[in-house]
Amino acid sequence: MYISRIRARGFKRFHDLTMEVSGTPRLVMLCGPNGIGKSSLIDALRLWHGGHGSGEGWFIDESYHRKAGEAIIDVGQLVEVEFEQAGMHPGVDPRKVLYARSAYRHEAEFESGGISRTGDLSSAPRSRRMIEVETKVSDNYRRLVAATLEDVYSGAHDRMEVAELRDLHISRVRDAVLQLFPDLELQGPGDPLGGGTFFFRKGGQPQFHYKNLSGGEKAAFDLILDLVVKTAFYDDTIMCIDEPELHLNTRLQADLLDVLLTLTPPNGQLWIATHSIGMMRRAQSLATTDPNAVAFFDFENRDFNVPIVLTPVKPDRDFWTRVLRVALDDLADLVAPDRVVLCEGRPAANINPARAEFDARCYRRIFAAEFPRTDFLSVGNAAEVAQDRVEIGRAIQTLVSGTEVIRVVDRDQRSPQEVASLAAAGLRVLTRRHIESYLLDDEVIGALCESAGRPETTSRAIAARYEATEASVGRGNDVDDFKSAAGDFWTAVRQLLALVGAGNSTEAFLADTMAPLIVPGMAIYDLLRTDIFGT
Image: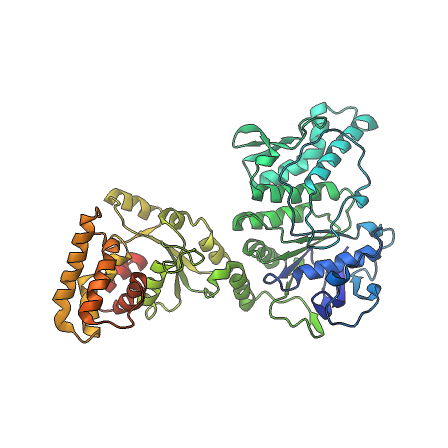
């Protein structure tokens, strides 16, 4: 089953939206930031299906489904859907045309207290609006157990071993979960008659209870289990999933898309509403292999208050730049750089904005002229830089082909052997302790005095730095810890040079006044340049 055209009028966000789907793409990606209308489109499909064969009848929430201020039209005219086959093909059960999952999927724990007959899959609980919370894991648990019990008494599998029969219904789920989480193996449903739930082997530990899975593991398991169970009925279906990537990191998001496509029936079509960088990068790869297999629809910067026709967009560089901007959110200014330097420092979203991205701000000021297409990002402590834990480097390299990622950490108290080990792992290590050691170098202090029109005060300003360092040592800090001495130096030099507008804090003074003084031609500039970019 493949959709060719959708029209929504006076529906939620849309005045008059027509969406044209050319060809028969296996995967349809609805792209754009939050609150832009992606979920509304799935809501439109869900409403249409309610009145066209789902068996539920029309369900309309007037304050939810209708666009405010629009003329009231008959509910049957709000949404129109056409199929590539010029209508649902003969013999297709209209109940199975559409299956949708909302973004609000959460079932923290459950236990079974007994076995009971489950209803037909077409009558299983389904969300009628994309804002509803879904709890499908426990229902699907009962269906798996019931299906196994039915097979025991059906006679169709009498020659099977018990373990083989039990495995018949969980093997697809287990294999798909292992594809995402290699150390998470589904063992079975436990005892359905008392305290039954899903148990796993995790990290070698058996009988790992479902409730102890992480949020990401539960989110992925929910979708996998649901597709395995529901596709027994929904075998010729438009499968719609709103934000399947929730709670998963970038790498797993990409792998999850592969799993979802594998579990989607051969005659089905998978519609994904997402702003996930992982999902998008995998869809890009699929489209590169087969451009007809994926259709991208860009919902960003569309005025849905006027009639509009959406057609698949060509995933060119501008499109991927917008995707990158949406996916990285706070890093919106990072647009297709040639090089990205990941350095230490509190990230931009940190609760202490005065110190956020301090190292990155300084590096940008220093190297903006020579390296205009290089950006610097503070991503956390040294371990987070070394491991790229938030996967910013991996994501950028995937979406912006050819981008070089450099990882730089402070010298701190590392021994030569530690520095050599980090270098062997591909990291750059500063020659000096930290960025403040460069900012408060004698050469830079001299440039500060020169810029203030007081070159004769250079020796006194350098002496102030030594005094601040001595005071810092007296507080128990190391002699090369200029970071701890920076506050006293700032106070002293501000008075010495009568500085005005040089920064309202130590961090602002260092980043906005001292950093721009480090320029090409200075020995300290050459040293820092070599530390970061190499010879």
